[in-house]
Image (tube, rainbow, N blue to C red; front, side, top):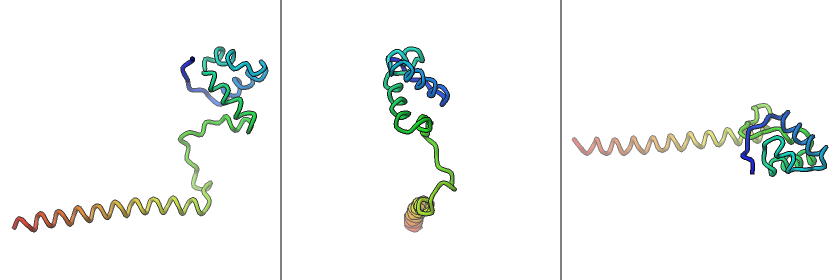
Length: 106
């Protein structure tokens, strides 16, 4: 089994093209381009289903603000506000405990 490696979009297109031109010979394609059989097969299936755009690596990419719908933007903003609220509540609890501790000493 070939260890995975990073590939560019152009490489993935070339690999899929080669595989299709050679009657979907995944083993030969994987050996030639030093990628795994499973990865070649996955790219070919994605290409068959959705074309070249499916070969774009979108891992770790976030949508830009203008790609969000209004509902998605509001949900994201709500999550940020909830997190900030939890932080402030914890901070208040710590300050109350600190006042109790300091008040008990004197």
